[in-house]
Image (cartoon, rainbow, N blue to C red; front, side, top):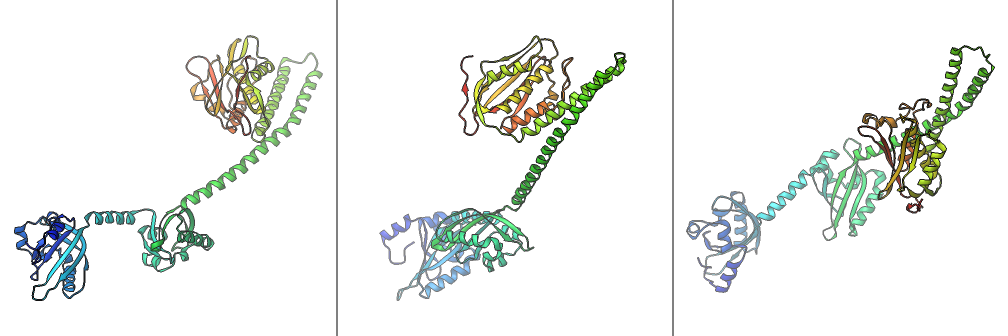
Length: 488
């Protein structure tokens, strides 16, 4: 095929090497030239082209548009833009974008030329983008600097309840909660100045009159006076946050009332209990020598019960104070602390308490740490089942904490009780002859340890022995890191 009387080798070479689809059509609509890209894309050979007119390779849905473009070109209009679809030899559709223009010469048949670009990849990408836009559960929109939405996705209609037309016909500020309009307009001004907006929150009125909380991320395109934005409906999250804050306030108030009640109740019980103890002693001292053994046993039981009540109220006082009191940090040699406690607790003959060389020097609050060690050592001694035994306190340093371990060679604790023993008023059997505890000591240990950012647990396998382990911060605010104790 020739170029219609203006054969030019250079021009032909340029057309053949082009990636665009180029063709020339005579006045009868038949092809006079198609380039290599045209043939490769549509798959027609020279034989097939000889029997075709240009509209044969234009898809039926695009023919009227293409015919109109040819007519306008032949009427003298320059480079008519055309977006259409061509049809490959195998029937496949090829979306193209290009232009048609005519060459009119006196005495020669008119010729129309077309140059088109295969936009299949671009169209596919646009379709995927449109699909993402339409299917997104987030609210996606394009807005103008004039304050109106230009395009919105279906999530707007689903979440706010308005139709697309209603949302596009009104300025978006009309949907914003009155209390949020000033801040919204400031963010629009920031966008107009080219600044990106991240995590801006405001409330949009829904059709039913309620307001939905939206969290926005927006980017401007100042040259086009466009804003591209995505919003997420965080109404449920906001509601959950408000519920958590309210519950936290109620819990804090309830805990404060409970602590105050425990403090007042235990404090006010101490005086009458002391009086009962004194009266019991006086009654016992005033009884004749001939008092029956049964009565003496009753008085002993009364004295024991009063003593137990006194210990219970003292433990309750200690437990209520543990959640309120904070004291200044000081340098503490934990090995010395363990030896001092062992002396004060005066374990039975044959029971030893050993401070391992691994125990560090800490700068921390003395009273709470001492209370934890005291309760754990008392627990190990009280619940040992033999006349002789051994308790060892050791430590190992972690990254941010120190792990302390109080290990004994007693009867052990069944795994099913490992968690239960830390509950209030939970007791284990004591040594013969030891007074029964109130069941608050280990609950107090857990409260103090967790209040200082640590945790406490039990390790007790098959056979004998149990280890109470807990973590304690390596440093408190304003205090230096723990030091290794000097040789002891």
